[in-house]
Image (cartoon, rainbow, N blue to C red):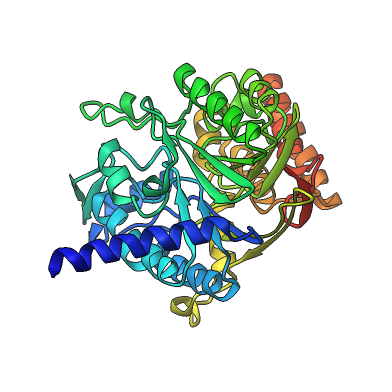
Length: 429
C-alpha cells in the first residue's frame, strides 16, 4: 500500500508538471541575489561579522524578512513561473539552501507556482560558508554541485529536458511555445579552501556553449521561443564595466553575446551586479535584476505574450520591514546608505596615499551616490550631482591626473542611463 501511495504521488506530480507546461505562459516573475542567510549562522554579533559586512554591504541579517515580504507579494501576483538568477545564499551554506527551499520555495510550489533556479558564484563549494560567533568564525558545511541539483530538484533540475554534463546548466519547458535554457557560468571548481578564495568571475565553458547551441537549435526546429537565464551578465551594462568590474560579466562577453544572438537567443535574465538595468547589445537583451538584500530591494513582475513574443516588465521595491518600523532610519534609507558607503574602501585602496583624506572621502561619497543611482536603474544625474562630481574631480586632479580622469568617467558612466528603460518597459524576445 505504501509503495502504491508513493507511485500515485509521483504520477500526480508528473501530471501536474505536464499540465503546467501546456498552459500558455502569461505571468512571470524574476528575483535575484537573495543571499539568504540562515539566522543560526550568526551565533553572536561582533567583530567577525562586522568585518564581513564592512567589505560586502548587504542586508544579510534582514534577508529572511525581505524574502518573506517578496514571497507574499509573489503569492498575491501569482505568476506561473519564478526565475531566481543565482546567489541564492549568503555563501553556499547548506543550512541556508535548505531554509530557502523549506520556507520560501515550497510555499510557492504548493500554490502551483513553478520556480527555476540557477547557481550564483556564492552558492556552491564556497570556503566562505561560516558561522559567526563574536570575534571568531568557523566553517560550516557548504554544498557540492551534485548536492545543488538534489536540493533544487523540484526547482528546475527535476523538470530538465536536458542537462549539461560539464556544468549545472539545463533546459526546461515553460509552456508549449517556450523553453528555458538555464546557464551555469560559475567557477566554483576554482575556489580555494586553503587560501579562503571564492571566485567572483564567470565564464561559459566551450562545451557548455556547444550544449546551449544544440538545445537552442532543437527548440527552434520545434517552433519554440527560447529564454535564457544566467547569474553573470552576458553584455556590459555601463561603459567601462568590462574594464573596472569585468568579474560581473562572463568571459569574452562580446564574442559570447554575438554567438548567442546568432543562435536565435534574444533575451537573457541575469543578476550578480545587484543593479536594475536592461542592456541590449549585439542582438541580445540582458535583463539584469537587482538584489533583494541591496538597495532598492527590487523584483520584477512580467506579463508575457507568447504570440507577439513581448514581455511587459514592471518593477517594484520592498519599501519597509516590520522589524524596522520603530527605527529612525527606514529600510530604503539604510540600504541606500550601505550602497553609498560601499565604495569608501575601494577609493582608499585605489587612490594614491598622497591624496588628503578629506578629498578621498569626497570622492567616495560622490561615486557612492553614482553607484546607488545605477543600482536603482533609470539613472539621470541631477545638476547638483554633476556639480559635486566636477568639484571632486578638480580637487583630485591636483594630486593625480590619472585617478581624476578615471573618477570622472566612472561617475558619469554609473550615473547616466543609456538605451532601454530599466524598470518599466516592453521588450521583444
